[in-house]
Each structure stands twice: as structure tokens, then as C-alpha cells.
Image (cartoon, rainbow, N blue to C red; front, side, top):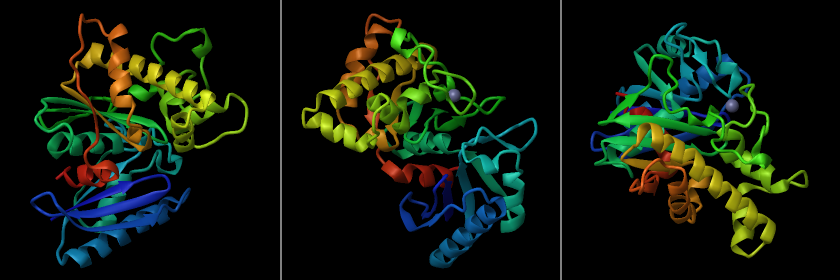
Length: 295
Ligand SMILES: [Zn+2]
């Protein structure tokens, strides 16, 4: 059987996947923030516990924030910054006594949805996470595409395309640039935009208030939809995937699946746009499912 681990900034989830794709066991623990050695130990204890439940030794795939650099073989681009510059794959292999496969968490999400989720049957899948950040992953014919720099699909740190005056230069991003897609389309990005300098409420609360007719919340969501349409249109113009699958907390906002395809035609270089925009089938489980499928 296969174990998938989703190593997040606040929690580490693990699951045992049976050969038929069903989940045989699941566990979750808090991430030891800012402590690399404790993070390794936490993953090891999670794997040991899951193997005890499964009653056998399993393969281990791990979804991580960031990616392993091909050049240095060290973690880069992780917003869980205590992982950056570390040989996480080799340290986990040593601690677990076996080969371990690592991939970016958004890539794991895209792989899971491409194989047996909302993108099954599609040849090219673009998977998008709209959560604490905005990750992305590309799957061709059931195989992850990472690229020589390991950044394929990382649309979140491109500039928001076709910005209007109010969107320029845009908020500062942790990556050092301004106006990144992530600063507008992550959950915190929506919250900051809706607060407009006032008191902040959660993204979920903004969606609830908009549904109840709150004008400020509604206009924040309308801005969000327009920006998501522009950002995905630029992806369609480059990749033209057969399907786009949304995951992460904001993928639960149902109106996006009608409003965004209605808006993105203005920006896609085509007389019509037939790209389906779908919600992830496996929800929060896609991270561990895709990590398990790295083997
Ligand atoms: Zn950025």
C-alpha cells in the first residue's frame, strides 16, 4: 500500500491508500513550526502510526510547500520557510530507511485530480489551489510536469494580468515582488481586499455576507471573480488545458464555476472558450491522495 503525506504549514496529514485508490487509514498532527528536526520527527511518527494501522510497510510520497531544486537538491520557494535550504528528501529517506518521493503540494493536488478526480479523462489538467496561497500544477497524460526549474504551474507568482489602475502596482508579496496573482486570489488576498484598510473578516464570512446581500462583501467577491477570470485566461492562452480544477478553501465558493467562465472570454485569445472549470472531487484529501500517487 501507499502512504501519502501532505506537509502543510499548520498541519501534517497522512493517509494510507489501498491499491484500488480507497483510503484505508488517515491521521493528522500539528506541524512543529520553525523547527526542522521536529518536522522530520513528526513525519516519521505519522508514517509509523499509519503503517501500524495498515499492518504493512508502505511506500511514502510527500507533498511539500515549495519544491526541491534540481540544481542544489535543496528545498526552495516554501512559505514554510524553515524548510528552505534543507535536504528534506534525503533527510526523510535517512529517517525512514527507504526511498521517499517529494513533490510540490499543488502538483500533488493536480495529480490526484487528474488520475481519478475532476480531471480524469482529460489529457492536460491545470490544477489550482486557492487557499492560504495560490499554487498550481500541470499534469500531461496522467504524469506531472515539473520542468527544469521545478516551477511549472506556479501562476501565483506571475503578475495579475491586465491590471486596472486600482490593481497597480498591487500588494507586496512574500516573494519580493508586488501585484502577484497570489496577493489578490489567495484567501488572505481576498480578506485584505475586502477590508480595504478596515477590520478584516475571514474569506468564508465574506462569502456568507455577500450571499446575504451585503454590498461591500458582494463587490469584493465581484472583484475577486474578475481577477480570477483574468488570471486563468492567461493560463488558457499559454497552456490551453482540457480542464481547470479548483481546490483549496475558496474552491468551495459555488458561484465561481458560473461567473468565472462567463468573464474569462474577454481575455482569452479565442472566439469562444470551451474549457471546463470544475471543483476538485477529492476536496481536502487531494493533497495526501496525490502524494501517495507519487509511487
Ligand atoms: Zn509573489
